[in-house]
Amino acid sequence: MTTEKSIYLDYNATTPIDKQVLEAMLPYLQDKFGNPSSAHYYGREARNAVERARAQVASLLECHPEEIFFTSGGTESNNLVLFGVAQALGDKGRHIVTTRIEHPAIIEPCLELIGRGFDVTFVPVDGRGMVDPDDVRKALRKDTILISVMHANNEVGTIQPISEISQIARERGILLHTDAAQSVGKIPTFVNDLGVDFLSIAGHKLYAPKGIGALYRRHGAPLGKFIFGAGQERGVRPGTENVPFIVGLGEASVLAKKELGTEMVRLERLRNKFALRIKEKIPNAIVNGEGAPRLPNTLSIAFPGKKADEILRNLGRVAASAGAACHSHDVKISHVLEAMGVNIEVAMGTIRFSLGRFTTEQEIEMASEAIVEAVFSTPDK
Image 1: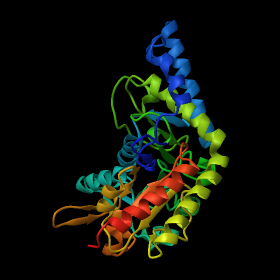
Image 2: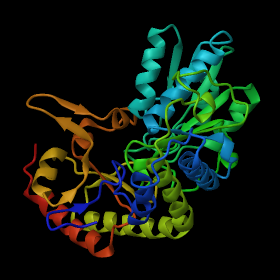
Image 3: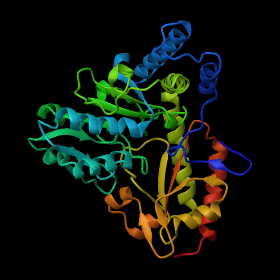
Image 4: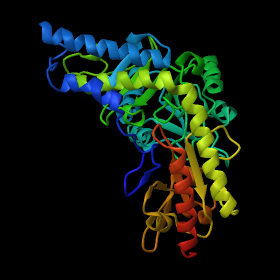
């Protein structure tokens, strides 16, 4: 996606709303405004739209529609699982296992649970950002009630061995959750293949609006109440449903399922071409997570000896994200790169580029040239 000023390569941060998604939403922002809980025609019309969207999301995950619950986004879905399982099973155990590279929407609730008397083990990752299932196995205890491992990392794109971890969880009778905000719509996320009990979706990573998400909950998986109200979403997530945004998420799921195979191939080809173009001109550039299974659209690349924020300032027209926050005298590298053991000199020069549905070949050619120019014009630290 290009404007006169920039090339957008930050799709892991958020995606634009697809025009087809917006068109599906518009009637429910205007004439079809009913409350899904109302018994009259307007309410039934809205209820039918919600249930249609539920089936569309379920189709993308290959699960039953009644296992899908709409939320305000990935953060709420993650919180719902962590606090809901803690409430439901807290009398049986108070230990949770997660990883050091999770999104703050997992880490922060875990820290809050520690303050409430729970114990959380943060499993390490290797230099590529990969979790070893054996480390998860070793972390388990008799009182472990939940394992939460992200499906794909938002910064470096590494795809975790969720199906292997699920086998370990099944052996021990422990619930498994995965934060799939970055993977849904980019790679297959079929819940039965993954073997998960819970899976979180964030709509704005999927060409749907910000402020809508979903939670897959395997039928019968225990989950305490997180929000109290009138009982919508079968009591799991009360509150009047956000019908237009739910419709948008449903339509986005339809598009994602339709385009998944071709987009995976296209984006991986563009991503690899992008990396090659950069490394041809800057041979000492380092691709974080290289050699590990990664999201096809994600390139985390470091320019040792440079500061990422300065490169981005010089870059101007290319929108991307830095791997470190640099202030006057302090540098804070991302917890993901830190967990991977990435050298601070490398981490300081790391930039994440993430491609998407509207990224073109021409944009990749233009961006690679702009990046090389920006790196060479950025003074060494």
